[in-house]
Structures are given as structure tokens and as C-alpha cells.
Amino acid sequence: MKRAMNLFVFMAVLLLIGTGCDKKKDERTVTTAKNESRQVTDMTGRNISIPAKAATFGVFGGPISQIPYMLGAQDSVVAVTKGAQMMELMNLMDPTLKTKPAPRTTNGNVNIETLLAANPDCVIAFDVDGRIVEKHTEIPVIFLSGNMGAAFDELREEVRFFGEVFQKNERATRYVTYLDKTLKMIKERIGDIPVEKRKKIFVGEGSSHLQTLGGDTFITKWMDAAMCRNAILDVNTTVGQHEGMHTGFMEISMEQVIQSNPDMIIIDRGKPADLKQDSRWQEIKAVKENRVYMVPSGVFLWSRPSAESAVLYPLWMAFKAYPEHFADLSYRDELKRFYREIFEYEISDQQADKIENGKMGRVLFGQKLRKNKKG
Image (cartoon, rainbow, N blue to C red; front, top):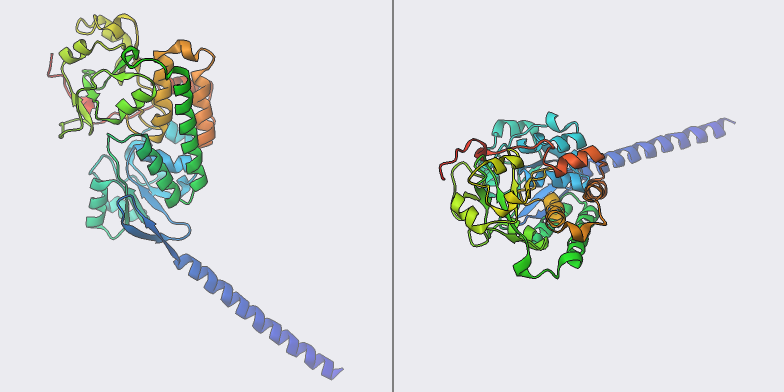
């Protein structure tokens, strides 16, 4: 009996030793996993090392702020851009958004102290903001490439790149497929409209409605997809810096707008009806035919090259320019489907109408205070 008891004690000791070893092994595995890193090649060809799991990010840029939400990766973003916090729909999607540090306000304005307090593993940014972060911190920067002249191919590449960074490739592919199907549907319905018969659209921002996006900007590609024409196609607006205006915008003269005589006008402030009371605008075709609209605004401004606007803005232009070709469809339903399938967020009919009519909360930049100095 005593011998059996000694054998039992010996086996128990061996079991305890084995358990302890397994526990230490598990602890080493966890520690190793935390220290593991992976390499990301950014859009400028630089190799960046970030944690393999549970990496945290600062995302600097208004239009790109939406992409983590499209990919279902928003919880990994710990530092944001102020403009995103000012968008009503973004806050409905993420009630915690306003509580996150916002070190970046506008291009080239980064609060380093706030960024360091947020302590992201890396920052995703374009050249100006990225260089500021590199100069003043040791936080790795994943650089993006792009400008106001970017087209659909560049946008597809950008979303796929974010899919790699956030390890959400499937969601990125879902978006690209959705974009392609939307553009194909538009083309199938109205692609046979001759170029010379396509509607001319003028985008007019600022209090003067004369700050615009020229033929060398993304908006021309969006209009092409809607089988429309940029009313100032021959004007390049990305050349040089224009004080008080967002990159890519330039203020043209009233005479240039009158000469172009657009079929549609899209404005970002005031009321469309006000142009009918203004003698300078009264004789323009779009004004006479009551085809002046507020620019829609959803997760971000559609007057910027974003993944959201690439799908919804050309579709909206096509609906407005050629309603007879889309009589069997509801734009409200198309809006709701996009947010449901891409953002996995359900919007109401009322919210869809606010987005389409430019009444969803939005942010205005430097051109807000710019005075009209031309006729």
C-alpha cells in the first residue's frame, strides 16, 4: 500500500512539472506573437514594419477616413482626421468617433503632441502629413499616393492596398466588384448617347459658386462615367496653389460659366432657387430649366475623390441627367443598398433623402470665407 502511495505521489509531481512547462510554453508563445511583425510595402515602394496582429493606426485624410469603415477595420484606428469627426453619417456609424484623438485637421496641420498621446503603431498618410510625422516622431508612416486627378483605377488600387494593410482583402474586393458593377450598369443604360449630346455639368463651390474642378481633376472621370461632360473641360485647375481653396479647385470668372452654358449646375452652399433670383445666373440653361442641385454628402463630401463618391456620384449624375433611362429604379434604394452592402450599415429613407439632397451634416473648408472678387 505504501509503495502504491509513493508511486501516486511521483506521478502527481511529474504532472505538475509538465503543466508548469506547458504554461511557460504558452506564455512564450503569447509573448512571441505580440512581438511578431509583418512587412507592408506602401504605395511609394517603401517597406514598413508593423505588428503582425492587433496593429493600431492613425489615418490622416478626409476622403480616406471612410475606408477602414468600408473594410470593417475601424476599431484599429486610434487617431483620426478632424474632418471625419464633423460628418454626421460617420458619427451615426460610429458613436465613439468623436472621442478619438484627432491630431490631423487639414493638409499639413498635424498636432504632434496629440498624435504621440494616441500612440498608434503607424500612420497612414499622404506626402505632406506623412513627412511631418516622420520629421517629428519615430512612428512609422505608410505613405499613400494620389491626387485630385486620380481616376477609377487609382481608387481601386488604393482600396485594395488598404485591404492588404488592414488584412481585409475580401471586403476590399467586395467594394471593387460593387464599383465595377455600378459603372457597367450605367454604361449599359446610357452608354450609346453620342458625346456631343451628353449633358454638360458645372460644379460651383464657395459663396460665389465659381470655385470649380477642371478637366484635369477626378470629377471629369466621374462625369464621363455618367455619360456627361465637364462644362469647363478645357480649364486645368490642379496647376499651382490657389489661396483659400482646396487643392484641385480654382475660381473662374462668371463669363466662363455663361459661355459654357451648362445643362446642370451643382453647388455646395446656399439654395438652388437663389440662382434664379441672381441676374448673373438667370440666363444660363441649367438655371432656366431648374436643374441646379445641392451636391450630395454622405460619409464624406462627394466633391472629393473617395470610394463612396466613385460609386454614388456618377450614378446620381446619371439619374439627374437622364431620368428617363432610370425610371424603373429608385435612387433612394440604390443609396440604401450601397451603405448596407459596403459599410454594413442600414440607413433609413429619411437619411437617404438627406444624403441625396445635400442636407446630411457636412464640413466646409477654407473656401467658406472666401469673398467673390470677380464679376
